[in-house]
Image 1 (cartoon, rainbow, N blue to C red):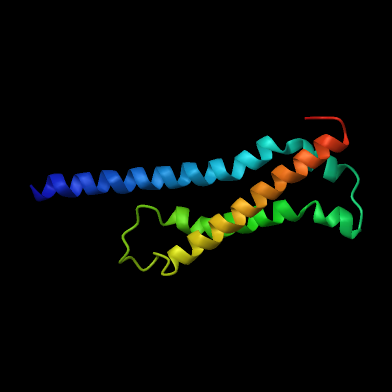
Image 2: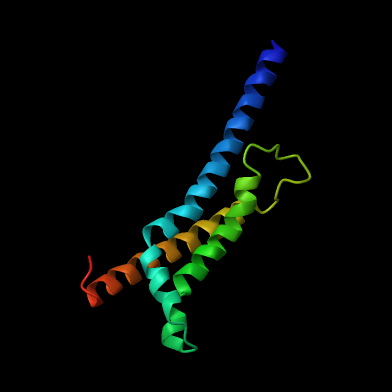
Length: 121
């Protein structure tokens, strides 16, 4: 009985680790796939101006959000009593989700403005 329960627990932990890794990878790839034309246009003509630098702000927010979400995804399925389990996991998750959503929505807005300015969608 104890062996079957331990096997189910281990299977759930393994599933949580895969889900955490897949979710983090999807969160990292989605903005690049959706807004690659914006990044290409920004990288086309680099300038040292405030107006130009603000175009990179969504990507900085996305990177910050992913940096906070990395320990959360890494600790998915981990035993909370483990010494490697992040003690401030909920705070990391909160900051990561907030920064990621702000960056994603700002990137979306920049893409819409760029599309309207250059006759795209």
